[in-house]
Image 1 (spheres, rainbow, N blue to C red):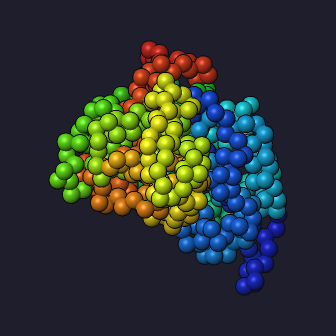
Image 2: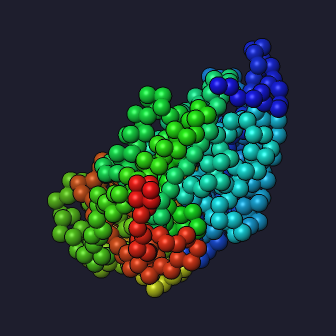
Image 3: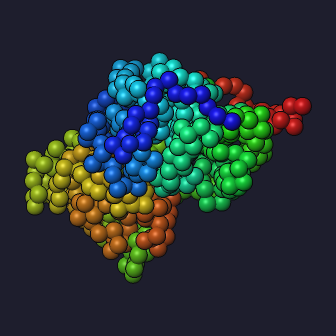
Length: 522
């Protein structure tokens, strides 16, 4: 089976063979619609928005999606159009102006392209668009034509929609949580794209969903239903029964119609068989919807601090306290103070805390100056009722940087890639070294500490704001991990009170849903 010839003729490369022009790039943000702060162009610029000729030197040699695409271009002789890398931290919905501007920049690079391989998140929401990524794919499909291969890589917490599946030739979700296989998934996409461009395959993608707000164990890939389905999908790909099988757990903090887990299957033209696979997989997801490999049993802030104090004296490795309730990776504000307040009250020694998101506090530290002491008001500014209000401390200012650091990996941030969280400082209060940042971010890479002068290997306690991504880098160095719920905006109490207005109904677990598997509806 072959695909139609592309409308744009391939070009001769300098080696003399025909070269395809391929669109690549990144437009990435995960949206928590319960976050009241809109995501603007400035949030993308703060994470280092790159255009055109700024991109190659930034991504070559990195274990990232774009690092893989540039390597693939050399292998397959592609000419790349790379108009944009735009990434913002998880947060509130994009403003309409921000979405339209970045989309226009990205799609301007699609002119005269024969195909596309690029990175989306899959759980973005924008003002006026519940499914902005489906909109991007639809606009791109209209530009490139019905037969051009369009492949997007996704986060496994994507809320995949019919519109996304209908307009992409393939959707390839990462298969690890923490997400450390973007590079491998991009290479998988590159191999698929090469075969499609040469007319060997005609990739088409179908989707299956069930009335589930969440499930698949929150996307954990170590054990449980997510692991089972990913393994089954790998076997189907290896046997040739499917080109791609992507299992996504969804992101339940997006209050949209198409929220929830999904399975997409890409096949060589035979969508009927692909649909059967997708439906079978989602039947299993529905049947296991209540499975939790790590039932919610987090310590509160005081309990966590007291436990850390009890074990700090003879600690050879750090205890990692992971505050999931103020995790910026889930769209939380990142400025909750309750855990830090408890750590100070417990007089922890040889401890590190990452991080308080507070640009004003950083500026106050800059005014005090490195080597000096002063009073600084930390955090608690966005929602003082969730996770604690502003915390005034008498602190020594130890380090101030521009916030740039190169990731060690493994982490979702990408091994070898440069990142910045804006003007940053490390201050010391008693025996606690505290990171304060100007751009919100969860703790996921050791370089987030070492770049400010903290040695994580010799800490007795490390407190992070993260739900799971921290594990890739920090669990290997930890003596123990303790999950914490300090009462932040995505803690258990806040989530239990969340009011959903836009999800499709009925939906589990908000409603009593019966007959959701194919067998039950026959």
